Length: 623
Image (cartoon, rainbow, N blue to C red):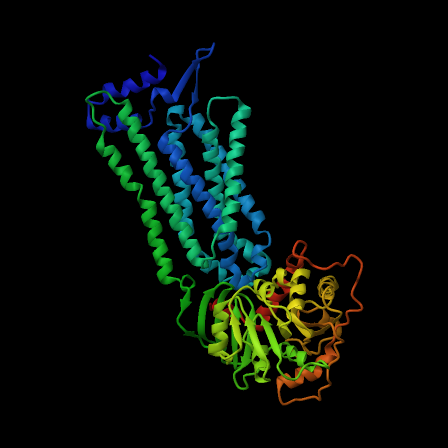
C-alpha cells in the first residue's frame, strides 16, 4: 500500500466514532485525489517525491475561466481607467505613465502569486494542489470584485482633492485606487494559473516554457481584448468589471467545491456517506462575496451621480447645471455661472465653448478668427459652402450660416451637438450635420466641394493627432475648391517652436501659403499688463490659415460694438511669424509618424492649470 493510501484509510477508521470526527474526516477526504493523479517515487533516502499530473477537470475549467476573465477585464480597464479620470484631468494626463503603472501592478501581483504557489507547495502535499489553486483564484477575483465595486465611492473621495494633488500626481494616485488593484489581481491570477499548468512531470526547462507560454498568451489576449473592447460609460465599466469578477469568483468556487466533493466520494469507504454539514456551510459562504459585490454595485448605481449617464439639472450658489451627459468624448455639461453671467459648454476637463448671457457672444474671441476665411481677397461672394469640423457651441457655424453660407458640420459627439442646439442657439436648419468621426468623413467626401473649412478639434488638453497628419491635410485639400481657405485652430504655447514648425510643415505639403495668428491676453489674472514674452509662453488659442492663393485679408476698421468686430479688426496685430521657426530636423507629421500627442504633455499640464485658474474646483467637480 502506498503512502497516499495509508493517509486515506486512517480517517475512514475514525469516521464512525463521532459527528465531530465525521466533519474532520470529510475535510481531509475532500483534499484527497485519485491514485491516477498522483505518482510516488522512492529516493535512496526513502523520502517521497510526488509529481502531480495536469489539473483535474473542474480545476482546468476554473483556470480557463480565469484566463478568459483576466483577458476581458484587462482590455476593458485599459480604457475605463483613464476615461474615469478624464473629467478632472483631461484626456492626456491620465494616460501619462498609465501603462507603466499597469505593468508594475501586474508584475507585483505575479510576484505575490509565485510566492504563494511556492509556499503552498511547501505547506501542502500534491494531493491538495488543485484545491488550493482554485481557492487562490477565487479569492483573488472576490477581493478584486469587492474593491472595484467600491471604486466609485473611494474615487469620489480622492477626486475631491484633485486640485491639491495637481495634474501629475493626481492621476497616478487615483489610478492606485481605481485601476491598479484590478491589474494586480490579474497578475496574481495569471501567475497562479500558469504555475499550476506548468507543474507537471518533466524537466525544469519544459515547465518554465509552459509557464512563459501561458503568461505570454494571457498578455496577448489582453491586448486583443483592449483593441476590440467597445466604448462604455466610465462608472458602468467599473461596475461591470466588478460584477464580472464576482461571477468568475463564484464559478471558480463552485468548480472547486465540485472537485472537493468528487475527491471525497472517491476516497470514502463503501457504505460511509460524506458529512453533509461540513459541506453545507462552505457552500453558503461561497455566495457571500458575490452578494456583497451586488449590494455595492447597486449602491453606486443608485447613489453616485457619476454612475448615471444622464442627470437632472442641479444648482449651487455659483453654478446652475442645465445639462449633463456622459458621451463618447467624456462628460458633456452645460452650466450657467451667475457671477460673471456666463453659459459654459464643458467636455471633460476642457471648456469647448461659452457665451455671455447678455449678448450671446462667444467668451473665446479666437472663434471669430474663423470668419476671416471670407475676408481673404478674392473669396467668392455667392454660392459658398463651408465645412465645420468640430462644433463646440457652434460660433463659426452660426456666423457663416447667418452670412448665407451653406454649412456642413462634422461632430463626433451627439451630446455636443444637442447642447449647441438646445442651449447656445445653433440653427437647426444647417445644410447638413454629420455625427461621426471627422477623419472618416473627409476621406469619403467628394472632391472640390467646399470653399472654406473650419478645423477646430481641440478638447481636454490635446488635439487628435490623426487630424493633423499629412494624409489628413491632403484630404482636406482634395475636398476644397481650388481657391479654398482652411482655418485650423490649434491650442498650444506660441514659444514652442518645434511643434508649430512641424504643424506648419505639414500644412505646406498641401497648401502654398500658410499664416498663423494668436489670441493673446492683454493682462494677467491680477490685471497687470503682460509682456510679449509672457504672452508667447502661455497656452493660447491660435489659428492657422492655409490656401493655395496668397492669404491677404481685407482691412477692417476697429469695431468696439461687438466682440466679433474687435477680434477681426485686431487679428492682424496678433500674427505669429512662421519665418522664425526652425527648419533643421523638421518634417511633416504623418499617420505613421505623429508624436504630437507626446509633445503636448507639457501643454496639457499648463492647460490644466489654466482651466483651474479660470474656474474653481467647485465647477470641475460638478459633472
